[in-house]
Length: 493
Image (cartoon, rainbow, N blue to C red; front, side, top):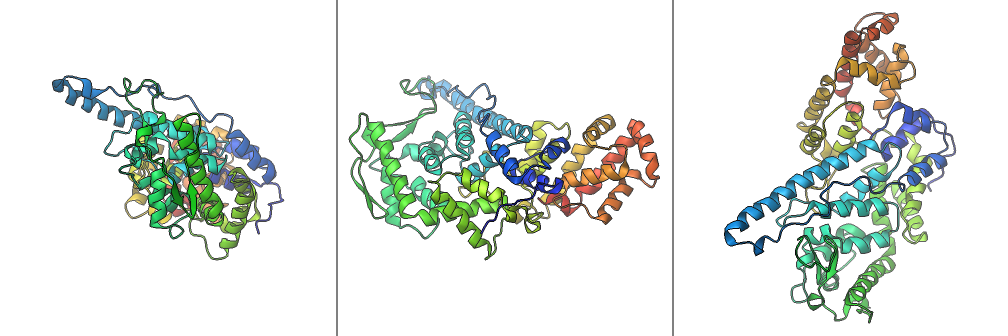
């Protein structure tokens, strides 16, 4: 049973909530959440996430590829090279764009949930066919718009999402050669999980998804908006299909496309009705792993079942599940704090938010640590948890975050501490910095240790004079943060 958390949020409670639902925070933001009820704080994070689902987009999102095969043969290779150049340049720009949005959004759950769905309905741009960044952008927007909406609608739309059609070869699936990739992953990874379907269900489902195309070329299929999926009727299988024990027919409608879309709706409805318990528990366990703990134990199963019932009872609306989980006593319990290993996105975006760090540098560090946005390792997404840190990535993270700090001027460091309440009080300043960066409230020994790092052996009363001397004060702040970055505690969430 997930009982509601009835107390007002302490500073530690507020920080735990913000750390799990956003990628970056600040001391002023934290103070604004402390003192709220869990109801008010979580509702604010959910409501605020819906206000701007489409931030300012890159300039090229409506610019298609040239139809290179129409060019003289001598010019085709150059045009193809240009296509692949754009694929990587624009997708790399999109990665930096998204990381920047993660760092800007301090007060909503939107970016965290967008990444959750990106890791669930996994798509990557680095594939054999050139994946236009305009497709990846539109999928990102889909996740932003429906991140706490209706799961049924999200599944229906991802089935004919342009990036998904490219990634799992749906755009090449025809009635004479149905491609089973999406049909299989829909069941295995996106809805019911392994063991809850048959190979025949995969084959029949693949027939439902035949005939979809997506245009990425500026001069082709001009009757269809660029990057939008459309049906090629002559390539779709209009015969009846037997799926999870039910029969699917293409209904008679005003257009071929409307009929085929209804066929997809019927297929999704069969999954959600025939396998409602399996789907709800599968998705809710993933949400539990994402927001609470990556390795649920046996007693946690009852909590997941409670969330799953909420999911079913609310007609597959995602928000009630998030609300129940994030407002619960269990979520705010000590057992749920400091038990997650930060993802590279949480580590890099969360720390660099406080300093002046170039976007391409942040991107490179995240990729080297094992998390490349828009390009997860495989169709199952990122394994996460202990895979985020090893004997290579941990020292690399410490090194690069330390470089982030060293790259700041001492004046920038003094400016940075202006956000804290009593920057001239060494005890208070150390306590607030540790509170901001550590998953659990700092202990007495930690407070003493990092105060020594900050002061370098000088008396407490000298600290105001030290920060008045910008070079000295900034340097001491850097040394303290460098010591903090080396500890395992800093890398937990």
